[in-house]
Length: 121
Length: 108
Figure 1 (cartoon, each protein chain N blue to C red):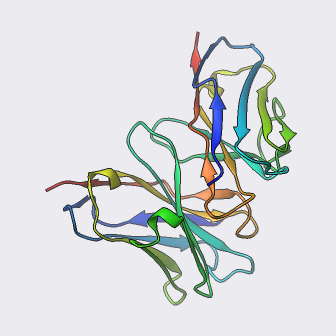
Figure 2: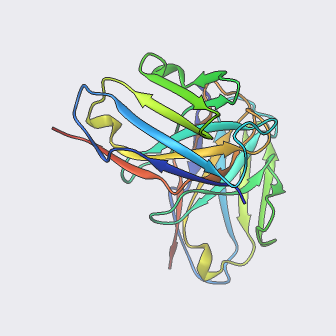
């Protein structure tokens, strides 16, 4: 069955770029209608959608993060990635990757376990 | 952005209780609303989509209702496994998708 697993540094310095990868196993990232997303959750707080991508590379970002976010897909490695530039302490959060249920305008029905990223010098 | 407001933020209940959580959207989202359950240290789990459709494998004691701007999640008979935080999410507009602030269901 399809599984997602986030990976990347757990500590990032302020003003640097946060980089995470989500490995998709048990299925192809190029499956029809498969949109893939990143969501984050600051400690003790709620969920925030960051952006989503289709395997063709079409991306959709939260408008307030557009200037700092890049989501990309690597079909040869069956994974997709998140880069968030110029990070501050406010970007400290658990970062989740997830798959939209059927298409972009559909909820997130399969999630990775999440990875904690702390922004600190 | 479409704002999603959940109430209450915390709910204390006992096993066997009927529990209802509310979610209000700042503008109409038709039926494009999902509910998630999240336990400490775990990823959210999709429970309900299209306001009232149960995701596969979700117990039938969970039900969702509403349309437009007012929605509810009801647990008909609270079980020990149901103590968790619940989030609503609108997916009517992906610019951006937005979540409610969460409702923590605690043991009374």
